[in-house]
Length: 494
Image (cartoon, rainbow, N blue to C red; front, side, top):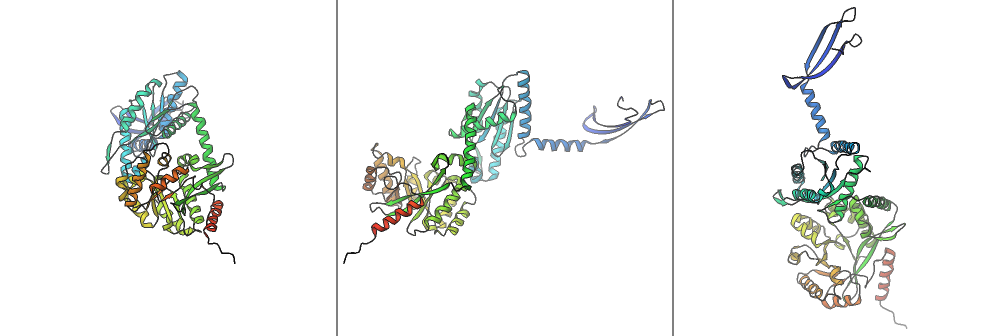
């Protein structure tokens, strides 16, 4: 009643009554005063606002929680992290940790089993994470396949036991769309430290550590160290420069000829992406592809190389063009359509294009998406098994693949001179391929001895620096012109 004064004769309040705590009421109260400004009567009007309060609570919950899993979202997680960090800074309370969790190969589940299966996996992982942490800890989902965990308190010496326990919980198998699936996660860990001033800084470093875990082979955890931040800044610079390279004509396609045995005729060329870096010079694809994979630039880089190579090689109707294709490219839902568009625009006949897939990818797509291989074959392009013989036990599967050629892995070629047992392995591959009518190509031929041995074993074609190194389009044009001149018949003097 003290709030009722002649200057403020009316106010509104929201309250719950002890006898009905589940309901909310809004009261508008007015005080009546006598000439001496003494309160002599109070009048009030009340209404039930329970539905309004429930709706507000629901909206607040939706704003702070992930709709799929019901977990706190990034906003709520950062708020809780802010509170824990503030107590740590103010009261020097016990240390705590932030874990950044990213599921490995989650996109494969979505692409092969469907988004409904992917959603079920995310819900299951969320339930497992909630079950494995303590009551006062926070598990959040940031979107996609990213989760975060706030462990408070948490000492650094606990990490060796606690984090593997979380990984084991994630790795328990489950059935999705009739398939048994085992999920794994890469986890970045960061511990509280007086240097952290904001929750965003801790989350950033946990994210950096998670990517280090990805780079170390996935399905593991990495504890953040300050030098990782320097590496992350360097990675960001590479990403920025690579984006610039796409727009600044710094990229180039080199071609390594594939020669028949024993005639040495140029059968085709493999397209290899190169980057004319303004500081580091000519870079091979393996020097910058890791940055491209992490930043979503693989698709535009591959598209540019494929378009450029098809347009340039079209001028030699007797040559085929080989292009290496990764699972990243094939998992793009519109890859077939983009491939058809490149062939149509460049004028390169599909029969002259050879897509090279690793034997691991061939096994995966035969098991998970067999129609993709058939669709590529139906398009008219040739399929080559790349890196064949690297240990995926695919000899027994070879006859079931719609392939026209296989490329013997360069590691087997390199062992010819040091490890005698590689020779019968290569010979077995060649004999099997010949019996199946599959063309054989030896990759990575670097010495005359390797070349002679492979020729003796009956390999159909070879590729490597002992024959011809990768060439720019200008160098390739000159090289092919030289071969034409040498093979042209000479006119006798009269």
